[in-house]
Amino acid sequence: MTAPAMVAEFDDVAGWTADAVELLGERHAIPAACRGSASPAALAWLAEACELSAGTTLLDVGAGAGGPAAWAAERFGVRPVLLEPMPAACRAAARLFGLPVISADGTRIPLRTGSAGAAWCLGVLDTVRDKAAMLAEIRRVLAPGASLGLLVVVARSPRVRAAPDGNHFPTQRELAALLDAAGFDLVEQIDRPESVPLAWSRRAEQVAAVVAARHRGDRAYALAAGQGERLSRLLASGRLSMQLVHAVGRPVRRAPITRGEGMSKDGDFEIEFEVEIEAELSLVESSRADEAAGRPTAEWLFDPTDAERDEVGLRNLLGAAEALEGEHE
Ligand SMILES: C[S@@+](CC[C@H](N)C(=O)[O-])C[C@H]1O[C@@H](n2cnc3c(N)ncnc32)[C@H](O)[C@@H]1O
Image (cartoon, rainbow, N blue to C red):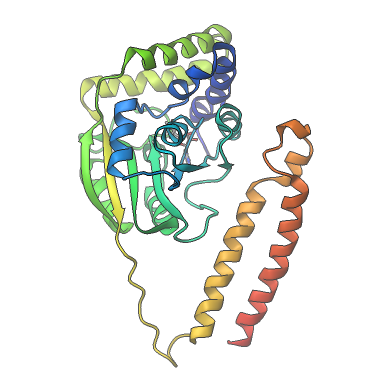
């Protein structure tokens, strides 16, 4: 179960941030919606390291309110796809930037194997218990040889006391081992650049001031502020540091299938086909067409009738694929 302080920090505050940006103006959106402590210098390093270019599909896992992905779209012309489990954060990203958002967990990404040109995961790994599952899933959806950009808070030694609720910071050795086990080569790593231009930090602070003025009395505000204070103290003490990482997926070596021992070539294709349909199906299901249909048309990110029709079609296709597979058993 997600800690209430994490829900406050990642969900309530994301929604309040979007409200405050609407009051202050859209130039506040990107600085305020970078909630993993990314700054222009950090994002530029990640974008250059990952060699982002116009048209690249950039999957942002744990995208929050969407600031980093929107920055990459604006500066590098990428096509972002956001993935985020917190509902108010998903809505905030859609409201602020009009970007496609998948409401899902990063340990089960409803996308096709090899479909993303690059991935970012900024300030997320520390908040996830099963880091290995999330990295393996990101590796799966990345195209062969594609880049992963991480912003990770790394612990100087195991067992960090007084950590924000729900956070588990890896040591450098653990991070390297996790990447390796998930099939990534760690190419380069730097300390997150410290400097943030005033033009950026002032806008983020103005949004934070509006949020504070409106919500200081809320329990969720106090919980979220407590999380931020604990993280700041640990960073200031040197027990934690923020790192930027560029990693690249190693090519997947598929074990050769010996005829007679394994499945036939046809069977192999059918399993892949089935997996792809299942992935498409969970993507359609995660769009929650029934909920969208209950909202005013102006708030729709997609037509729920189309999604429902797709779901029925995909279920039929899945049935056919399962039947085909059964013929080969
Ligand atoms: C510190 S915020 C960073 C948000 C965003 N990446 C940014 O830099 O602005 C961490 C984000 O990770 C998300 N997150 C936590 N657990 C996750 C999971 N299992 N799968 C995907 N995202 C997750 C949270 O909801 C939150 O939005």
